[in-house]
Length: 136
Image 1: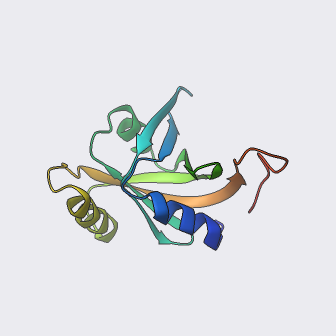
Image 2: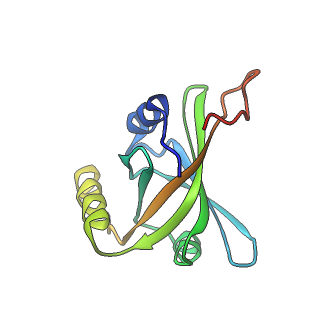
Image 3: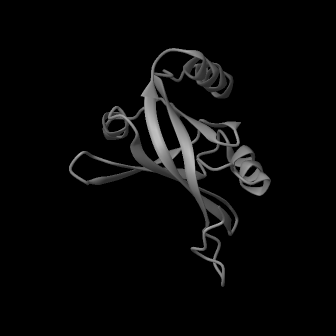
């Protein structure tokens, strides 16, 4: 695992709850799935929590242990791609933290579960000469 740089944490915390991010997962046979996400918490520099209100294929994919996942977030043209492994939970402290966060955003959302993502890599996705470069 690697630690998210402060600029990436700030980027994620700025868009939380506003769906300015996408989450990519992959099925057990390699079929990609990409969805917009808005309920996201940086739990600590090595862990991101992603709330499930309406996931179908995404939830199926991350129910496999240590499924590879990627989250890309951006504000204007500044953006980052975070890669890691995800595990789906429906109880415990991570789920409770996410459920409370979702209720604060919109109490009518179902808060069905939570992806606990462990960060392995971070990339710059802003247009320009550093696009695609690994940050950590």
